[in-house]
Image (tube, rainbow, N blue to C red; front, side, top):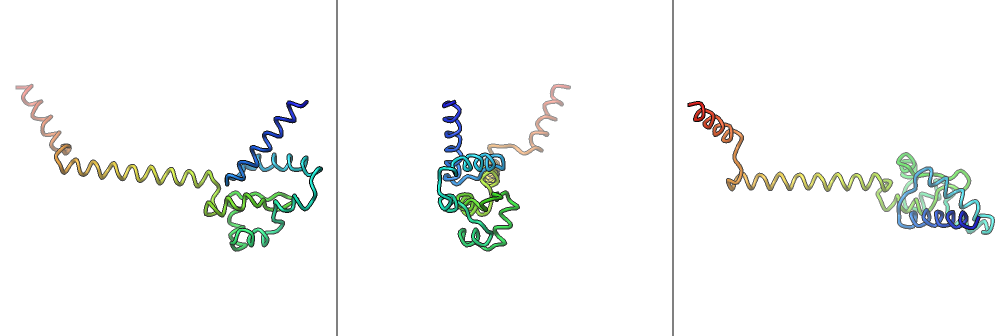
Length: 154
């Protein structure tokens, strides 16, 4: 029994650490965290739990320093709301730090931008090498191929 409790506490700490690192939780992780928080709630005072959440959209907006409509947009982008407590402050901070995007979307966007910059740099490198004469044009290669075929057939 102690092993199971230890594993549950460890998972609870992992979820809290993920939030503190500014990462967003999936819906399943949010439910899992809520389950662990309910177990913890028995030993905590109600106002300690209330300090972790913003009950309304207006409070969430003022806490984040944004407009209520921004909170609504964040909800469409994946911001979760706990039915009992409201918006988790750590998740609000993560959305604010990531320009209103969950971590996964922000990471994909950054990876795509890096890949685009890399491809653009590679293209510029090829252009410079072509101008320096390191690469042949398609027409030149085709003319050489035709000439070799003609020599072989004679």
